[in-house]
Length: 261
Image (cartoon, rainbow, N blue to C red; front, side):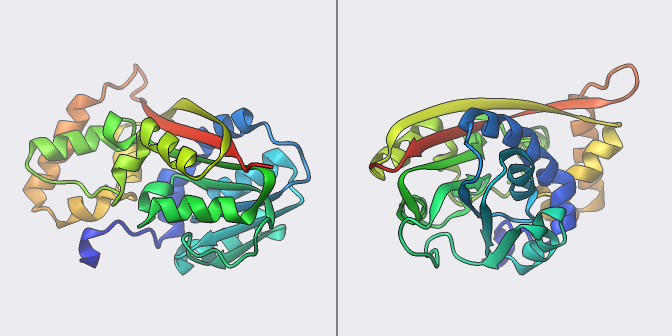
């Protein structure tokens, strides 16, 4: 049922929550990839362009193409400064509209566990990257407690409320990612855990920002008394510093490999 699926159609709300988190992880991810300049990139599941813009700022690419199924997210992406050199198109990660070897690098940022058939998604990444090119992703460690919403999800479960999760959350496990990359025939596969921290001005900042994510619709549908109880349970779980700020950590699993030459 559609109402039981995570949807990202509001680029501005996504930016406040996951866009910021994605760039925090993305900086370390790009340091790890260490790509040379003047490469042709495809950002699959580019969403609102948060990671696309980062790679343009950091990597001096020759060309960047972002693919995403959401017109709402793409509209936000096209309004970014990155849109001056990136092209954003609506498309399906499992059926990329490009010929073999079109790109030097294919990346997915916080996307692979949303793809209905992750094997097909990785196969498509490999297909459109030239021999010797890079295929890489990073994804929240959903089952290992790495998602930025973990504090809220723990308290939701304690109250008998099931949070929405990506349909293929198990793919976020490092061993599952390695199996995918190995199965796709990629060479020189490497993995890395990336841990980042984000500071919110206060608990209200944390809470309001988090409601722009996948937990927002579930919390909004709860009876008011229950949603307030959830909020107070989460507030108790998170300890502010002397200035009232909340610093919160998240962890992603990353993997990269190279198309055989």
